[in-house]
Image (cartoon, rainbow, N blue to C red):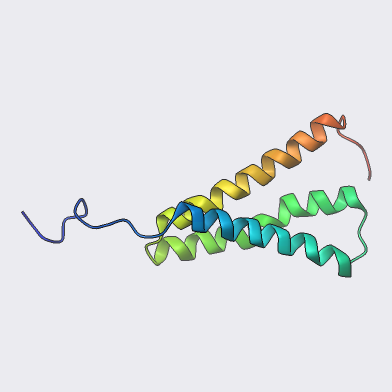
Length: 98
């Protein structure tokens, strides 16, 4: 059997590290609200759109550095935030703030 077999290589990264990283990035985004004057409903829409601008490149970087579990945790947080945003709009009856 070959020693370079991918089945024998330990997995790198941690899903928990990705979850914590995603939560910290989301909290940092909310902290930016103190310095910008944006309507709250627009701020939530911007969060949903722009979070992927910083999450996706970070996921690709983590996967390239062979940390797939950390990338998976980061994607889980991104999807949970998107689900929360969709739930917020559904509970409020899709407010038209434009």
